[in-house]
Image (tube, rainbow, N blue to C red; front, side, top):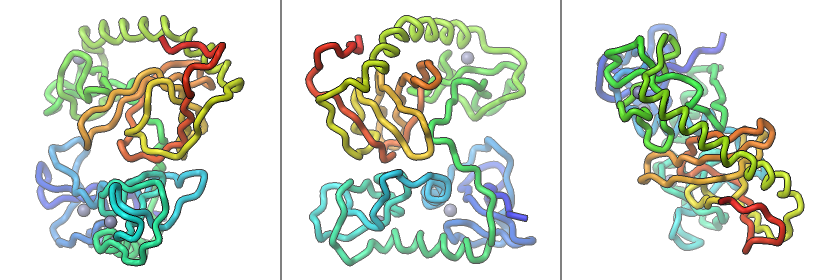
Amino acid sequence: MPLPLIRLSISPTNGTAHHGVMVGTEPLTVCATHATDLALIAENTAHSLCQSCTRAWLILTTHPHPGGEPDLRPAVGTGKSATAHRPIPGHLLGYCGKPLDARPTSARRVCANCSSLAAALERFHRLAGEVSLLFEGSCPRDEDVLWAPNGRGNLVTGHRRHAASGTAWCGTLLSGPNPDASTECAPCRRAWRNERDRRSTVLPRMRSRARWWHQRRNVETFSGRAADLNNGDVYTVSGCPDQHHVLTVTHPARGRRLAALVYLPGQDEIVELGIHHDRLLVIERPQPPEAGMPRLS
Ligand SMILES: [Zn+2]
Ligand SMILES: [Zn+2]
Ligand SMILES: [Zn+2]
């Protein structure tokens, strides 16, 4: 029986939480933090997740980049022979948390922080045996579910989450999904209805742009990070079969996810997706507008 990956903490209500498993009565974290009083915590608590565990989670649950990935990459802004880092699959982000360059490196010295998280994960796999992991879909759609407010005071009324701001459309701070909500917040519902109207206005344009796409001639294709996405780009990402036609992309402060409004030809729908800053994408970028190319706006 594979062990389920759970969140563990010393306090049941707040403090630092880790990802891990219980091996019998022994807590085992993925980052190798050890304390005998670590115990399973409830969902949507006020804990902040350990930084190493956050990255370990990405390592465990992200599909590798379809084009293959080197074992080591240099950090952004460093020379060819600078310290090498281990990339998290499907990301331009080191095990240590440093943003990495897409080019390979010839350096032989490997970052100590990358190596220590790799060693912690190796140990975790050895001691935990098989662990059941849900491979996170690359394009989680938060818009289809209702969310609970911060503090979870009112669990009857659910809110719509706005991916760009991370809060509800009505401005309420949110804690997590609330599938049991029986009514939808009225201001959220109004804002969400307007948003859907706005999308159906631009849908025909995005549809014809996607249909035209195979005729493109002047398109640059490269592997790059999500933070470099532009409006009008088309991208694919590991773990998702769809082509994503970017209508708009919102770049929040570093550390928060990007919000991209994209057209998915397979589903003939415009959806808003949250993307990790350092997610590795295959990006197709049109060069100065070609004749016949449907415009974005
Ligand atoms: Zn941890
Ligand atoms: Zn590193
Ligand atoms: Zn609301």
